[in-house]
Length: 288
Ligand SMILES: C[S@@+](CC[C@H](N)C(=O)[O-])C[C@H]1O[C@@H](n2cnc3c(N)ncnc32)[C@H](O)[C@@H]1O
Image 1 (tube, helix red, strand yellow):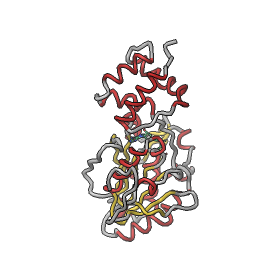
Image 2 (spheres, helix red, strand yellow):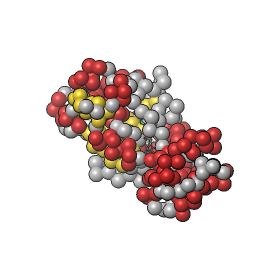
Image 3 (cartoon, protein in one colour):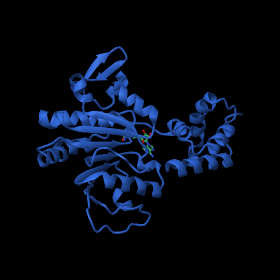
């Protein structure tokens, strides 16, 4: 009874999420939406989901309220070395090339939408395994996500046995993780390379670091509307070194929404180099 969600309230919530976070709510997801909102309604003392949504709408400019809804609704599905081949490409081509071109310093990598950190940790593992030790020591992986919950888990650097079995070869786990009663903890040699912070990719990005040599923005654009995708890609473009690389999820075409990327995609891997200067306007693009 209290779990009913009429089209009116669905639209109200969809409008708030679209305006405040650029996230698209699809009507076919109503069933799972109700299940995800219920714990939040209970926590805030609302018996009806409609009351919860009225509250969220009223408080739509309150970041804590919007963050709590985003935490409840975002899909955080992830795993180590997700999809395999993009990480082979990084290991075999991209990272050696970047390391060679930046012999004098470490690499700076940004994992946008890193969920609980598995993507960022996978990148730190590659840095340790591909770069000369002194260059790896000077490198950094910055993991960001809109979900505070996800970032606080990522910061702990603790993964269950089951989570490590998703994508981590056992020799890699043994080398880079220490067994603890709860599962496995990322070893200090990797932790030193990792920084995490909450960040909404749709909002302007303020980073203390100058530019990133490599940015991963994978399996997040699919949840956003075109105008928000354009904003995310404009952010990413402005934070990418002029000879840097961008990787998106396989079905996420950055070139279609932003002319500042030259596609190198193939074999089911979506990757791009930055185009500098003389950008062509692409419909829906939110700035270069
Ligand atoms: C399906 S996970 C993908 C995680 C990882 N990139 C991967 O490919 O395995 C999507 C992540 O995007 C995050 N997310 C959704 N909208 C976002 C936004 N506007 N800004 C930053 N992160 C966002 C979610 O919180 C979630 O952790």
